[in-house]
Length: 369
Image (cartoon, rainbow, N blue to C red; front, side, top):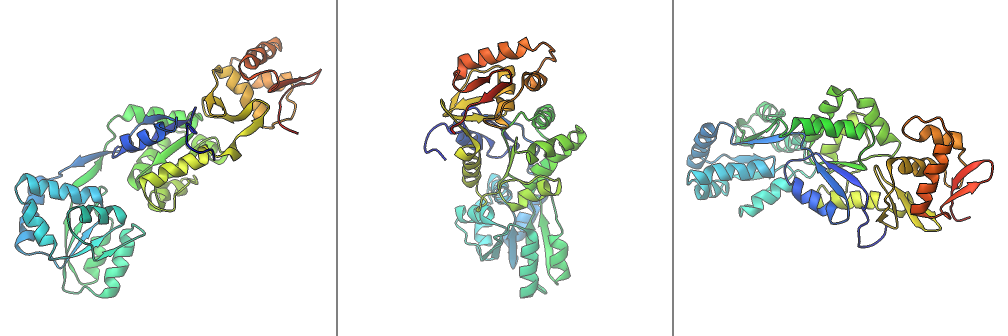
């Protein structure tokens, strides 16, 4: 991959997240990408705040033996609710007397930011691993508070109760409807049409909600097709987030570490890799979803010119007849002269040595022998 610079020039990336979407978008834009944010779910904070406060006071009065923190945002929201009622310091002190279990690095980071140290972290970021760990240890007769993630209880409380614990669930936020459902629907249709070079996911509920919109728009086959042919890269922040995508027939790229920065690097590595470009006499050509670049410089080609380049790039160096290229051009023209005009305009942009004429046969994309 090329070093520093706009290696994502000409690319279009869809971000399906609401939380930290601007941070993710900015990191991609710094490398030249055009980013669309269409959050597939929203976050409804402070669900039943009165109940959360009641359970917080109960916890402060009698801290539980074990507290399970499933998400960073959920834990921070719990602290926010407590602080607005001047219970923040008391809650942190009470938590310091409990054994703290974190479901993954984000939950651990939220605890550490509050000055707390988790006793154990589920690196797989799954509630199933927490259930296995605590059940194997033996928790009969112990009191356990479970801070649930945005989708609510995922069976962990039931598992811990079956192991003999007395559990209390705490729901501080829930995943809600998308902020702009129309934007999600539009993003789904654009993805199906091959309009994005990459689609990024940062949570399993968000991925599941986006796929639900895909089914509602009746474009599931097209979405799977653009992924399988390599036209669009689907990228997941971690394996938990990737699971709904894999179930739907997509194979996302997943960084080794479930971090936002690692996700950005994975997208850059895939879309900026020279192996996905074509060497030409004028430089390295990349065909993006809605643009083409030469050495990361965006070419001012028309939609018709991009279709020609895409057709020629399918088999670099191979000759494509006028009839074949005419069928690929938008507009449905039957006049072979249309191809000659389109090729002429394209040559004005990329150079005659890039798109070559093969007498009486057609045209080809010139590549080094």
